[in-house]
Image 1 (spheres, helix red, strand yellow):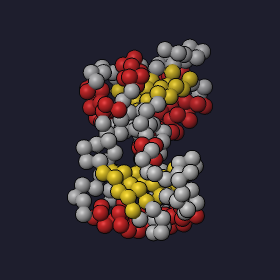
Image 2: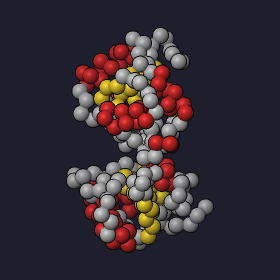
Image 3: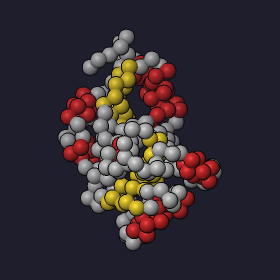
Length: 229
């Protein structure tokens, strides 16, 4: 593996968002060769590792991980350990708790290598049919504090906007989106119950209300003037 000044390397590895066949050969090779895999949820990652018969040591690394553990792991990489960081699904550090750890690695002068792959928002953007030469990705809307301001700002963005939302707040979010703009939503992307919704926010809300399986959602809001470029 490529190293820098005898330090270990941090590999930021994208994993499938649903369909395990979407993993890259390079990601599999990397996960097999590192000394340790830092996982958002070790139980979820072990399902992936078991599927590809990857024998690897794992540790948890998520939003509740203590600073002491993160610093200890950084020190191990500085000392020569090669570590891969993965999220439960998709690309680490994209609207994900892995980003602060990557920043710590940058500050420590660690060599960081991205192993690219699937990301839910790029997946849905590729089929939205809206202009994507310019778009704004905003992650998850705030749960409570700052939520109204968030949607006021969204309404003022003229180009395509993409965001994530949970099954618990999807209907509330659809109520707060601009009703005059087209919307496309992907639910459970690449999974067995993948569903694509198109229409305005209120139309899609009615469709989702009729669905018993709410899943996880990626929302794409069309530009104020929706003309393909």
